[in-house]
Length: 365
Image (tube, rainbow, N blue to C red; front, side, top):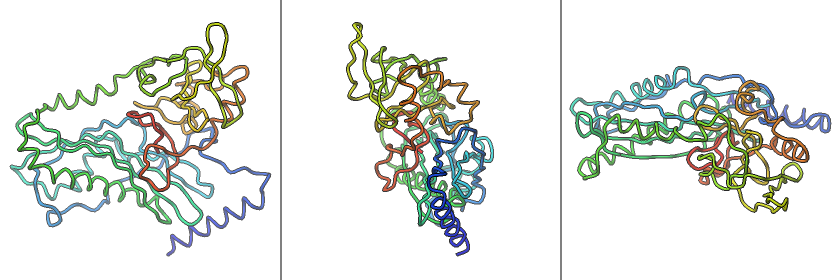
């Protein structure tokens, strides 16, 4: 009740304050903030363990391999009266963060002599969205499980990519439970398939072979090139390969209504009806809802630029310098617009977008 009362007071004060100063102040979106957000550590230390009473013991242990693309954070959260954004970070190095959680949560059901699992975590992400009568918390877990069949042989057990939405009035303190519940869901669905997978004839992999699969996902030109090639990228695959489909182009329009034109050798311009994004002077932009959303490389992926510190943005692309002439006003204006995710159609309320999915190019939280 106290959390609800505090939350409601905070929201009512915010509404009154903004109404009083309409015309003097504009609502601040996360993408308008120029400097680095602060950090909030998210601990999994108090997550409730899974007990042998609640689950049939089928494994002797779980080894976690971190293959997350974002090596700096697990998302962005909201704090304070104006819902300023802060980076959500694990309270220890990611590999230790995940392994310690798994040992504490699932250790009670480990039985010697049973097969061991390998969990490869490809993405762990949390986010928040505030509404008038409540807050929304988001969690995404993308992971793949392998079950041991010999001393150094494993079979693919389960691949899962889930995104869940949870409501409440103080959701920041619920992220550890939401993360833990996602991992428990992953364990339960994988454990149910162990017997059938062990009995089938699918090929086996060594631990080194499993590591190689996910290491290869990071060997992409879009992650290796010192500077991306200028041009229009019609598909996300073209972007990953750093091979623009249209090398010469122009952009025209107003903020939020930008059109991209292919420029032929004779100077003739033709509108590009569908595209994934553009690169101008090395600066990367995703084309979304007729807007250009600035992206910066971070870890093994791309985060919406305005969520990062000014320093980190400068290391990947000098956005202001990437636009000259007629494109400057329209393009720069459109990058400030708040975007929402399109990677998770199952979510009834999309989350605030902060990055792109490195498998599909869609917007994620």
